Structure formats: structure tokens, C-alpha cells
Amino acid sequence: MQKPILFGADYSVYVRAVRLALFEKGVDYDLVPIDVFAETGPPPPYLTRQPFGRIPALEHDGFQLYETGAITRYIDEAFEGPALQPADPCHRARVNQIISIADGYVYSTLVWGIYVERVSKPLRGEPSDETRLAASLSKAPVILKALADLMGDGPWLGGTALTLANLHVAPMMDYFAKSPEGLPMLDRHANLRGWWSRMRERASMRQTEPGE
Ligand SMILES: N[C@@H](CCC(=O)N[C@@H](CS)C(=O)NCC(=O)O)C(=O)O
Image 1 (cartoon, rainbow, N blue to C red):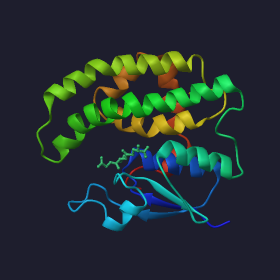
Image 2 (cartoon, rainbow, N blue to C red):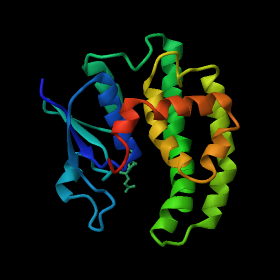
Image 3 (cartoon, protein in one colour):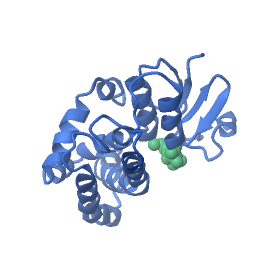
Image 4 (cartoon, helix red, strand yellow):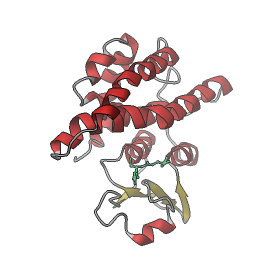
């Protein structure tokens, strides 16, 4: 089998989810840089891999794939290493539910609505959209409570062993935790706070820090 080739950038939460899955499975890979936020946009040939111009995309043994959820599930199923999806239908559904929550609510609210508006734009000297920030700050508690409720006693999101749910949520939580409101909001949920402390210490998280 050839090494998989991952197209993307280390700042992307979605690319990081794939990198986490590869790391946790013990799979070596090549990362081909694609900067979707470059002034000129992604290189036009990349659009043949990902017609929507988003990252990541994966190629493995000639098989081309995009959409992060499809990629991480493929990695889990195509390679040896610890299973990142439970076999039991209820637990597997829970993992998929949490991944869907990450895509549908966590990314837009905690990453774009809070981290980008509160931290990233001021760092770049751009004005924040205060209306969007305020709306996101009021939505965040609902998201965190939903994750905390689904997690229960843990120790991981979606089960007693590490699952893909953790690998999808963690990169988003990492940006959220870098905003001033992040950790104080997480502190309201002891189980989720404990999860974040464990998750951020994993070798996979440390090795995939943006900018490392
Ligand atoms: N549905 C896509 C979403 C990927 C995505 O939104 N990636 C971001 C980077 S984290 C991106 O490429 N953004 C570029 C843009 O919005 O133009 C997936 O699951 O792979």
C-alpha cells in the first residue's frame, strides 16, 4: 500500500481531524500544502480533487476522496490500528451524531463566530463583527451543554475508547479554548473540561498543533 497523500494546511480544523485520525491509527502520510485562504484562492488544479475549494482532500492508492467525515471513516476502516468507531450500532450512531454536531454547530459558532471574531480578526487588525460575536457567545452554552450531556461520564466523546467524535471536535475546541471566553465556559461542565484536559495532552494533538 502507498502512503496516503493529504492535501491541506495545518491551520484547518478539518485537516487536523484527518491528521489526528492518521496519527492515532499509526499511519504515515505526506502532506501537500494547499492554502485555501491565499489571496488567489486554492490552485485551480486542486478543484479537480475538491470542487468546492475546501480542504482537506485525500489520495490513497489512486483512490481520491474529499469530505472530512468520509476521509476519517475511510482511514479508520482501511488501515490497521485501534478502531476509532464502536462496533455497537448505538455507540456508532452517537459518534456520528457528535460529528454532525461538530459540522453543524461547533464549527460555525465556536471557531468562526467566537475565535475568529474575538482573537483572529483583532490579531490581523481587522474589525470584529460584534453582532456575530454576541450571537455566537449566546449560542455557545447550548452547544457545550449538548456535548457534555452526550458525553456523560466519558471518558471520551462517543464511548469509553477514543473515537472519531473526539478527533472531529478537538481541533475546533482548541481554537475556542484560545479565546478569552473558552475555558471559563468549558469550566461549567466538569466532564467536558476533564475531556479537554486529557485530549489536548495526547501526542496526536501535540504533534498537529497549527504552526508546528
Ligand atoms: N465539508 C467540508 C468542510 C471543510 C472546510 O470547511 N474546510 C475549511 C478549512 S477548516 C475550508 O476549506 N475553508 C475554505 C473556505 O471556506 O473557502 C469537509 O468536511 O471537508
